[in-house]
Amino acid sequence: DYRTAEYGTALQALAAKTGRCLFPGETLRFGGSVLFAGGLAESLFEQEFGRQDGAALAASIQGSAAIAARDELEMIALCVARRDTRGVGALMKTRPGSEAELVSIQPLKTVMAGCVRIDSQTRLSRWTLRPLLALAVYRLARHATQAAQTTFIRAPYNA
Image 1 (cartoon, rainbow, N blue to C red):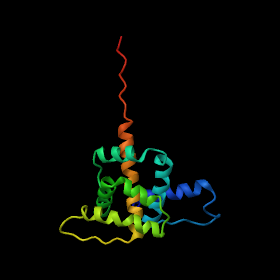
Image 2: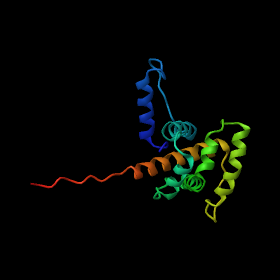
Image 3: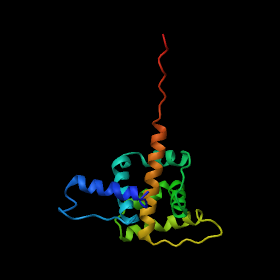
Image 4: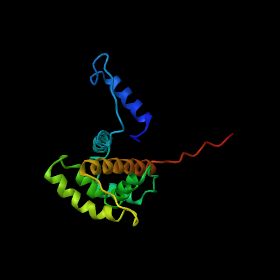
């Protein structure tokens, strides 16, 4: 969760570990940036799932057990990512800020309308929507594939 102190601490440790992010005496602050977290999620998604069959991954995500949302925006993003995994994947293949990005967001707006509570209204810019969807689809893909990889090992008989 990019909004927690633990996330900020982990990022600082990562930056310090590489040695290329900070000059001696500099500090790094992350104020719960959804932009950075979403970019990180996009990169991790591509590394871990980029070579998988998109239809099979979408089916495993859509068929996996529900996961808890941390707030209403994440609930909406998880709903959109579960309902249109391939559409979110297509969005992540576009260049941020491009015309192609805008085009790929359009069909997701319709899906999002079905994910917002009837008694509420949500407005998101593309700069917030994209990272929220990237985080959601990455969480769902990790959850779905980890659940599928669970195996049971039979314990040996006691002599």
